[in-house]
Image (cartoon, rainbow, N blue to C red):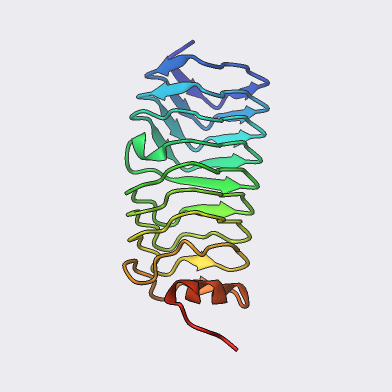
Length: 189
């Protein structure tokens, strides 16, 4: 495989259980690809689109993602905190469950209409991020910066730490926002 790819489309590529090192992808489109259990090591993705791809347990060691969009992808179990910073990704209609964004700086990240079960957002800076229409069941937001984050129409976000996290001016929808009070052992009537 070449080291530099610009403005290319990769369709129905099956590349599993391998290590891809030091490749650069700029303005590339990946559609219907199976990259499950692949390792991207020291790779760079800039202004790329992944659509209908299986990226289950993808490893992103020291790889850089800048303005990368994932649409309708299966992205289960990715440890994003192994990626190089800064990291700029958008996830739409995708399953990002069991992934980790621990301690990452991801201001303005967009997670839209996703399934995000058991995702670790602890210690992350998610200021101005958007989680609209996303199911955040059992996801953890421990000591997370959620200043001005938007959770409109998101649900199951009971893992948000209101005491230790920063949450000023974050947006939530009713009645789902009442779940945030669950951790305070109070009675609502």
